[in-house]
Image (tube, rainbow, N blue to C red; front, side, top):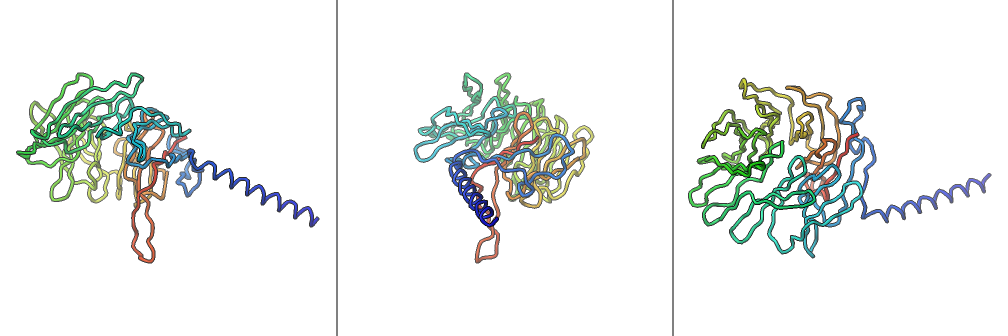
Length: 373
């Protein structure tokens, strides 16, 4: 009996050592975080569409959250990846870790903008001295690049906001400012017609802009006294006509639900909708940090309590079936996949410094992919 027990203990010890050795060899591969309460799996499995399945961590080699631009299809994300030897525009399969280098950008000054919600185009900026070229790179097989517009810093300052897509992937909006005169303007590029239109915004300091799917209205985030404000208005001929304005808790905390309705996170943390058809507002949630609507506007993912991430169904002015999907990271950016079944999560981690009692924030090494069942 004693010999049998001793033999069993030896077998278990050898098995643990073997498993530990295997784990060491997996360090360069995709890490799948198990479905545990600590990893943020929702306890309510009855709501279809928002039950967390798996959580993936991209390989840490040469990747940080700021490198990843977004989804190009339902399996791959794209970003500027590389170390001291140079950075390449690279697509990564989040499930297998397989990489495909698209362009060598080591000798170029390039800024990767947002990927269109349908994953078919990447908005990017190329720099050549004081000249900036804004273009769209197709993610389909031909990978052709179409120039949207150019800006010469000698006559007009570079854009003052990111290149932002409309939710239907048709329009790209940004703000620019003339360096000599301080005159701001909203610029909207129509991908279907290749037309570029602009609207003057005198006296505004614009840090974000986005067009509605119909191209007839826009939301603009302007700064005043260090406080961001969302300005929602219609785009008439030659003028931006303000319809509604509200303070924000961060510079891109506003989005379109439809052509007539926006949602924003106010400076006090309230998640608010505004409908221009009847000039009505409604408060959906309280104490919200950042948020992101799904591409079909049926779901919303948002942060609360600093490092807790939630997802819910958006129906009218109601947020239904709230699910806790992740804890442990302060989100800084959220991106839905084109099929609205995965979330790309970038963020920071809180840790307690010792011996000092104050909490500090450090960047998370890599982004995570939260996959819904």
